[in-house]
Image (cartoon, rainbow, N blue to C red):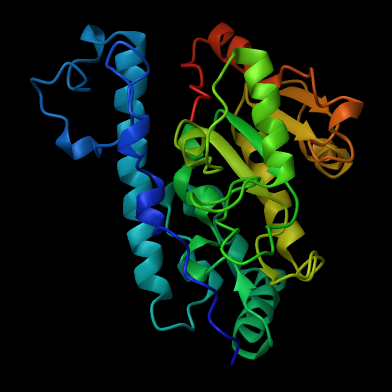
Length: 312
């Protein structure tokens, strides 16, 4: 039996809530703290009368709705994973993705993948990350109909407490990896955003940024240990599905591995932003100065969509 992974500094539900010390005044960017159910009809942020909302109030209301849905999905996935033994197809609970990817997790390759991951969790001498209820966290925090942009990563982080099911993201309380530090540096130069003290990117995800790794599980301290076991075929299906069934998406491809996925994307109806990877080895070879955050918002604005509040 593999040892249990170390307890993260906060529960995953806590990751959605901004610490009080970083809350700003209502004149600045509003904080996401309340589920949509708490918005009353008399509230200026209520979605009951969309025509009365300012763009910022509309974005706050939309984010609160997405946050409430993500919390619901998290609870459902936790209940499915409780006690162990849940199949991969049982851990994906977001209805819009179940419809968009209908039958994908019942294909022979996916059943083999399910058996492999289950065997690894039961028999590996080290933990497997992320925990089962977070394997599909990218799909649970960004429903299919909400996807505006896609940031493609590679392997999950393989250190204790790091992996949380979103590309490049780590839970609050975990040291920010160098690649993410460089992402924050570029964001600061591009849009002037304050560099945050944590690396939790869920706030981006609930606004419509699909934070998708190409492999969704990994052994502790063994990079690429679950590569070429079936995950790539599944995540390729996710990318192909959003490319085929949606239009006007922004695909943000950092590094050669992400850019290899261009073959899955219909470039005639989507927007592709490419640069070097933000790792310490390559950030100075084209990632710094790419301005992908402002470019993404410019594209969304031209399409008449709400822009992303990148500030964490």
